[in-house]
Each structure stands twice: as C-alpha cells, then as structure tokens.
Length: 367
Image (cartoon, rainbow, N blue to C red; front, side, top):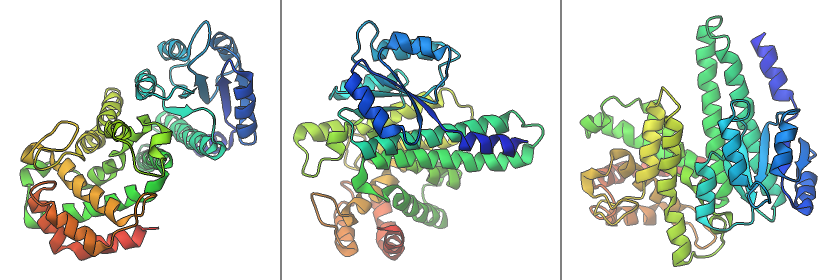
C-alpha cells in the first residue's frame, strides 16, 4: 500500500504557480516550464490566494516587485497559514543585491532566481526542487505508517534523507557550475583525514561522540550559503572584483544561518550540528586572517580546519574559467607552504604523509 502511494506521488505531474504582474515574464516562464509541469500563471499575489482556495501547487514562483501586495508580504501570509506554509516558494526578481536575496531566504523562500530567465538554469533549478518535494512526500507517507513498517521505514527514511541531502548539494553545485564534483571529492578527502586521525589518536577529545558517517555526509553542506549569492557573481567567467569577492565571502555566514533555521525544527540534529560548523568555519585560517570570524589556531573547530585543506586542495587541482588546474605536486607544495599560517600543522603533516591517498581520491572522481 505504501509503495503504491509513493509510486503514484513520484509519477504525478507537479503543479507550479507563477505569480508576476508582468505578463511577458509569465508567458516566458510558462513556455520554458510547461513541457514538464502543470503551469498556472497568476498576475498578482491577491489572485494567488484566491487560486489557492481551489488548487494547492507543489511550488510557487513568486515575483517580489508587485503592486498592492509584494512578494515579501505574500510569503509572510503563506508561512503563517497551516494550509500553505509548507509550499516551497522561489522568488523571481530583477533585484540584484545580496540584501534582497537574504531577506527572501530569511522569510522562508527556498531559492532565488534572477530575471531575465536562463531557460536551462530555470528548468534545472525547478527540477531539483520538484525532486525534493517528491522525496518529502515519500517521507510523509512512510511516517504515517511508522508502527506498521518500523524497520523497513527506518532503512527507507535513511535512503530518502540521503537523496534530499544530495539534491540540496546538487542545487548548490548547479548554482556554481564551475565546481562540478567538488562536494563528492571533498567528502572523500575528509574520510581519509578522519581515518588517519582515528589511527593516530589525534584530536580524540574534539572527535568524541562523532558518528563518522554523519560527519562526512554533513560536509556536503559546507557551501550551502552560496544559495544566497547572486548568479552573475557565482557564474562570472573572469576574476571577481573586490566588491564581488566580499559578497562571495558572505556565503560562510549565510550557510550557518540557513542550517541554524533548519535545526530549530529538527529533533535529530547530529548531522546538522556538523553541517553548521562546516559551513561557518571552512574559510577560517590557522593564523587568524580568515573569515568570517577571524578565529585562530585551535579556536577554529576541527571540522573547519579539516575542510580548509580539503577545500583548498580541490580548488587548486581543479580548472576554473580564470585558471588552469594545478598538478597534485604543485598543490601539495602550496598546502605545505600554508602550514602554520593557513592550515593546522598537524593536518598538513597527515596530508603530506598520505598524499598518495588524496591524489587517488581526486583522480577517481575528477571530471
């Protein structure tokens, strides 16, 4: 019975509301998305609420700049209503400032898409959120039958949670397309580090109580805050200006803030505990010159110190629009040079002693 319900949920064609007072934008978005979804175009927030009495959509794409009731006001009404509070809202807007994006995310939006629309990017972003919603529906179905299928449900929920985590991580990489495979590779590097630390008995107190599987999985969210960074900055092919780089640096704080909001509504948060630390601390430096908090030495949580090396190493050996990929040997020299300034010296020593494992982990998954 449960499997039948979830199969029907997965096959069901999703319904999208697109709410915008600009008819041209409505028609463009409908043309892009109608092949894969039931698309209902609505010219105002007030009419959206009238339509909600008849149809509950799977996702709402909501413009910010609208007369009578703007997008921010509309989402506040949605989130206060039990019938509508769980509908994912994606803001669509021509606004180009970080503060506007952060405001939308703080009010409960799941994403922020800039106009004019890039068709393939719009399709991909909606596809990812539709996948997330399908998995959430499956989770709800299994939760309703907890007592009947307790053991099977536990295994299935774990698998579905992994799918949701992967989908969110894919959303982040979709926004920063130049870093393809980065999340998977950094996970592999962290697993090497954790295994070596356990063998050597290093940082036992800091690692006390860690569940390695949750720890490694949680690292997928280290760049979650990039969701709040403008598309034209993340996808810029050349070198960033000082102002653009400052905007990108904010992703560490944004990521920690988003995960904190998620944690408020979750009882089991071992995974999120690590995820928040990864997100907020992976750009701190051993000598205190990092960001966002300028932490120094052992004041930087171990998760941040580990990810600092994994993140930089992978960035060095990966090609970017503005640079060629470094060889492993050159990247290792840079990591070594950063010992005691950028990186924890103990972790650099492990990296250098076991650099063959890191090289293999990089080449096994590098595209």
